[in-house]
Image (cartoon, rainbow, N blue to C red; front, top):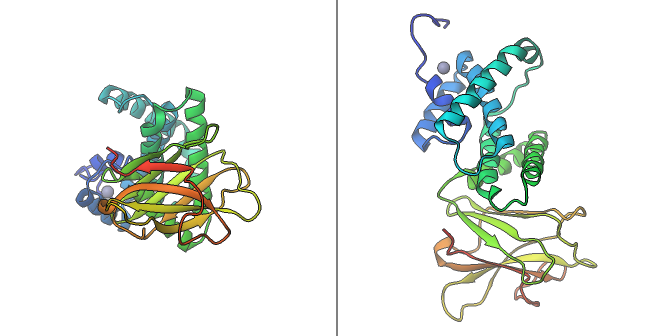
Length: 271
Ligand SMILES: [Zn+2]
């Protein structure tokens, strides 16, 4: 259908909020259903909204963007889109819808973490790295895409609990955990020292019940560049029953009981 003059597509109003991850579940589902039937007008609007999202990411205001800021950004974005439209249309790629969710998640994560960033440059660097990471993810297998989508949901959903995991030893970076009661836990950090030999870092869930033993979870070594990234799809205990997350260094393959003092600990009590 091409009835652009007679009626305005009601879904157009929702596209920007959708790209920002700001819709509730019902609205999101209806927008996705609408996009799935191939509305070109909305697909184009989504393309532009992606620009808005990336502009927001680069500006990363300290608080939620005001309506005025949003309006200004939209003008900029529309102007840029118009200027580049011919160029963009020819090179337009097919990007799966989960990608927008992932980008929105990156932006929300960036806004959340911005107050802790050392400087605007540092915030920009983190955001760029996170966006680059999302672009890389796009190139991987279907299973990896599903995992990335899950991770995006965990990071974007306001129902997730943010858990800061400071290091007990000086000179080590803080890790950041995000726990969604249904979808799992994402833990990440940068510039971690790589454990010696084959030793690995293992996650433990410390139950609220007094005297209960730490419950072993997955183990993983940081990458050689010091990046640490962990998605636990099915944590071994419920969020509501867990008091702390802890990470210890263990022999290759992990342990049934912690054999060293936790290096990182975070309270699930959170916000
Ligand atoms: Zn439409």
